[in-house]
View (tube, rainbow, N blue to C red):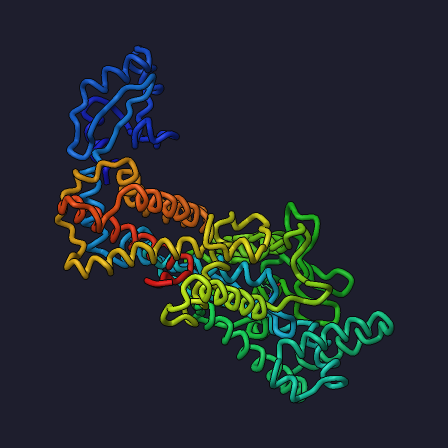
Length: 560
Ligand code: ARG
């Protein structure tokens, strides 16, 4: 918005395309124009050009001053103009402030979470769930038509193992009561026993092949395993506020692998190697296996069939997979094959890192036992409840707020990190009410909300008709500029598939708000005009925090 006005003013004196830069240090202004390339054309030094331009350019209303610094022309926005503009925008757009239509209704399918039936939803799935959820929210907020996909791991040889284990050692009662845990125990027992008796693997393969051949008993067991586990997963998704449009997973895909393979064969891309059907892809040493020698489908063939199914039914422009980076090669090969088959949509693998335990090790087990996602979340909520009991024992709705704080801590603790990097999972740190954490930002939001609520007792309400020129304290100016940068933070996260760009912005925002809060009292301010201007700035800041947290999947209660 401001950028366009500056570019228009520059155009009068500068030929060709004009690009502005953001100076690395805000002391140098809000925008800068570099004069290097112009120097060649007009045969003057860039320093000379900059100083001449700074004199000549007509100042747009929103610009306070124009200064030449070396080869750059620097533009300083007038904070009262910007302030008036952003405060009016936020108070009018409210929950929509920061949204845009850059997506223009384009369809984006985002696959994330995708846990496996019969194995616990492990930490890797938790990261993908949190990141995929944030990306979906950010895509929606920027005008995309988002379809959320959960590609359940509900097919494959591990089902054969489970069926063998369940029919020999399982309990119907436990399967009903704690399906995820019971099936996991059976899975572990199977793998233990297999070490002593390798023939068990053959039984597992036999069971899986029965399943692939629609054997009634096998299908009945499969359905029981799937339905009971899914019910548990759904309860968890509901608790953390994550939704999906489809749970079509590997079992759904297995039905159409034959057709997919036929297509690959028609294009003469496949060959038989030691009884298995494989595709050799240029530039990859490892071939992609589409059918095993015993005729069963593979992970790759099911994924291939799924792409074709999604192209036909969803008609997406972009398909994003949020899956751990250990599967990077699988997706590179899958996308390469899709291109060979003539699919030229955008396929993107957002490869997330792992969780590490505070001692730096891999975070999949604790004292040798698997960690269940639901246990971790419940632990976080309980700890949040304890903290709230100490800090604010009279709080209404304590239980619900503890839930929001626990989940907010978990989500923000993840999303503040570059999603491609591994992150250390440290419960105490992410739950802290101080520092760069979810609870700290939620608390900052509640602090702003409480000022707005207390203002009511003085019969004051935030409005956009305030004298923004009174907001001249450095911390007020900083806050105004940050509010005007909210949508760039959202777009940055969108363009790079990296929610941490938004999370880091919110950290900066939280710091700026708290500085302002301590330096510039509102309700006790005697100058009524200044008090009202601050009240409007507080409400605008509160709204930015609410919207920003919401885009990361985090609730912002007004009290905590
Ligand atoms: N269920 C798989 C796992 O837990 C992840 C699925 C990833 N998505 C895919 N289309 N292959 O490892």
